[in-house]
Length: 237
Image (cartoon, rainbow, N blue to C red; front, side):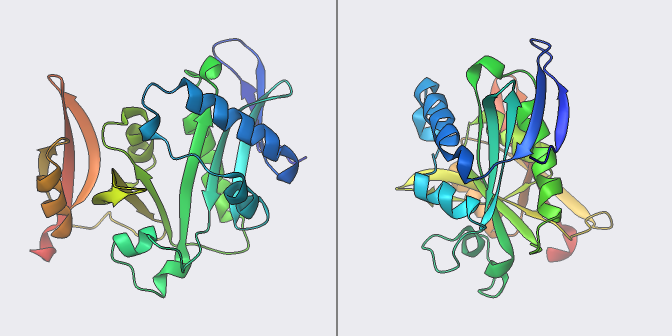
């Protein structure tokens, strides 16, 4: 089995290795997802994948990598190529054309066993799955995902990867979700930005900004209130 990364857990000193997962680990993936879901205080923040969805990914429509401590799967992260004809395609939510939908891959679920949190596994898996993405036969231009407002760990994870909020709307049975995107081949270094900020609980205000072309780029807790910072190319007016 190909080993992507080897290291040591800060919390226990155990060795950890990250490898691409296959159908042979499907039951282990589902068992970990179920355990993580059961431990969540607010289960609405997580959208678990079904066995069929994981099978679809593992049969060539994406990528799953996992972290093992000894022989136990303790964390995993998944990317999935969505069917273009699916209802609610995230590419449509952020204004991509039908042709551009073929260039989209979703950053799907990320799970870390509660006993192994605090070791930076989510961040490490994010770094390595994006490296593995570059090695796939098919090249993608957009990585998209959804995150619930106030799911602070997941929001921090997405911003740390350089992903941006491009929309805020109801998904998955009327659940409010930020829709994040990362444009893999875009160079923003020469843009002339203007900035603004809004409270995270100001849903209507954020939706208005996003409809005008602003993108959410970071979040900050200011005196107990979560704020989202937005930017827009000044040339957009």
